[in-house]
Length: 165
Image 1 (cartoon, rainbow, N blue to C red):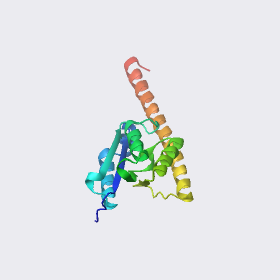
Image 2 (cartoon, one colour):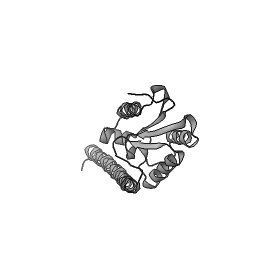
Image 3 (cartoon, rainbow, N blue to C red):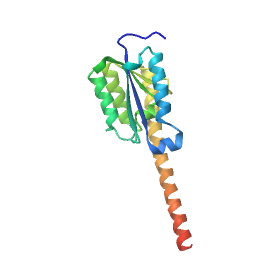
Image 4 (cartoon, rainbow, N blue to C red):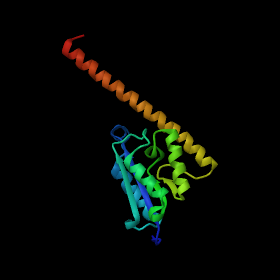
């Protein structure tokens, strides 16, 4: 692998505890695959910047490490060439937020790469990303509903076993 002098990449990682349990996302998997992709793109390890929002829902735009990552690319610090993210749901679970984030990355001049989605910055790619953002938002709502139903079922069973039917 040829290392390109001056190339810098940013890898953004995120997992919420609900998603970690439900879908098997792990920070370690995202980190390893993100680093591998950065090196594959020709970036030397010392020029790879990792930002990690562990345990924070993707429904919120104001995530400390996401904001720091966006500041880095917007301010063109370290000349970030690639903004690498595991998949679109790691970037955001809110369709409107996701489009804003993608636009900020694009305006910075960095190229957005999703490891699990084949995103291309063209009309079809933006359409696909918009649809996936809506699906990600829907999945989050379903996950919250199932979690809430499970808590209610547990409480009902606990109540009935303690106080009888």
